[in-house]
Image 1: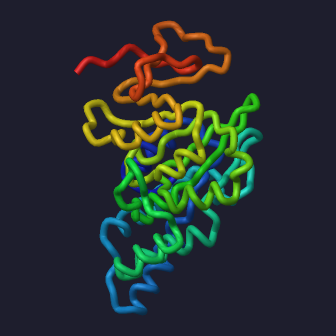
Image 2 (image 1 turned 30 degrees about the horizontal axis):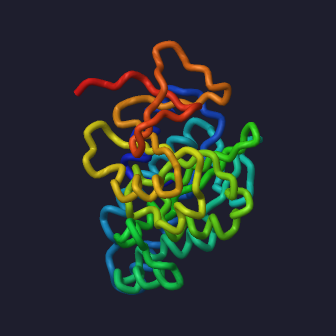
Length: 271
């Protein structure tokens, strides 16, 4: 589970009740709530309701996991929860600083996150996504068949830059990137896209979503020669052998007018 937001967490209650689960990887929301609560009381402030509601929802999910007797595993950077899966972020220090940012005045929080970070440039010119819940997303790499697939959840520029700094050699020949936060331009910089330069980029975005993926993000990927595929009401799948499943057709990149081997989707869902 990459964060405690409603969109990230909502459906997992149903999954947990319907699908056999051997273990759940997640941050401990109850610990974060206690730390933030004591910090806010110490400085005479009240927690931000949206964030505390999300954290409380996360604690509720954790309690349900415990009630089923399913082990909860913290996302330890460098660990391998499965043979082909590696946890790349966030580090405990980054996570703690990010979540404690909820208790800082906004101006100080923005300054602390952007200090030392390069400004967004060229096509991507909006500010970084400063939501602590998004910044604290678990970043996973799947290494399979000699290829690296990166799944950063809703991680932002600061979080991804931290991952690239520590795992640059692993990501040097990145094959697949799940574009963070539905392709929002607040979660990637031009420099990050040039550094990662994946062979394939995939966006999870809703049907008819006019905001995601951002045109600026699509243009930035186009500049490095990366085709971008988006769900947008369809199901995407990747087959390493290049074979299509019955009823599937080759996917068409949404940032360029030609197909790319290896990815396919269901026929478009009518409006």
